[in-house]
Image 1 (cartoon, helix red, strand yellow):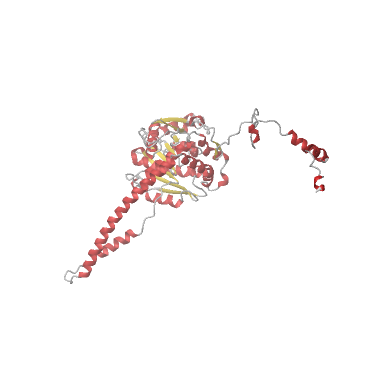
Image 2 (cartoon, rainbow, N blue to C red):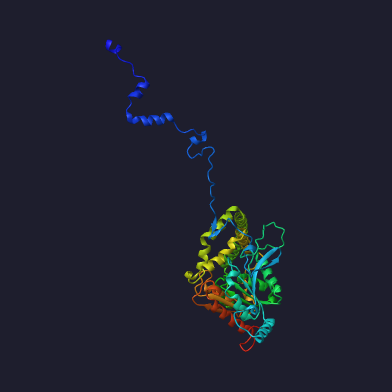
Length: 461
């Protein structure tokens, strides 16, 4: 008990601090001093003290196929020195014109110039129609040589949604008289450019999807089209069945089978025949019902697809597709992708600098979908036999986009059409093999419109 009473109380805090080892003094001093005075917001990680200005955060710049999307311009601001614009229904169509009279590469005398002028008065102009995703640029290597061959003007224009043609706003309930992104508008523009050149008729040269415009222009006004040149035509012709001839033979054989009226009637055969007729009638009704249901679902699907494409997600999708596959598609169109120069890439990606390019491309796609679902529109592939003007079909032997065998089918479906294959060439003969392309076209025009002893290119009557 006395030992417990004599126990000393614990030392005070001051005594403990005095007895603390020397190496703990700096740590204790820092703890006593505490953190520097700051605002309450500085107590949280990542916060900025009051009065301190941070540099502005840089926004990530958007890019599509290497083209900055934060500094887009109006199409006319991107025009070349030789560019022109022609307004149709409020749409300013970018185009370029080459004339054989403007050719300064050859030294011509005055007599030769007079002779060339005389030929141009009798010659036929040539209109060039580019394919999907292309523009006037795709004809740049052959425009001037074609003008010399034709002895007349050559014009190429950018269809709406492509090149430097203005991006017109359009929606399904728009009050404009004609959808600028429709096939009908492209056909109207083609015929308007024939008038623009002061000609009664012209030779239409279409490439890929541009062949559809050329053929539709012929069907719209055959008297305005002197000839068609279809390059890698994106007109897909299905295989013809081989059952037609055999079916006719079988029907003839059935008709030649004698009918013996004196033979006893077969009651089972009659009942069976009646049952089969009933089954056919029921099957026909079911088939009509299924077709009606299919049309309803297809119509709903098209409406949903159009709504999606016109949403912000549709714009995001088209930008992503062009960024990932735009340049790749250009390279894939050539027989030898390694020969695609930076100049070619820049020519195809330049329209991506235009304000509203993605919306216009989506509206063009929507128009294609709606046209394909039109019940009143007969597919071009089913009307090829109605073409009566001279036709040349040209293709590359290694076209990866529109196979050469399909181009050959197109030529076989058109009465009297000529078919030419350019070796070592892909989807763009006018760019990849311009010399061979010009040679093929010149030979066709000479054969159709004149002999070598006559003028190179005479008006067709």
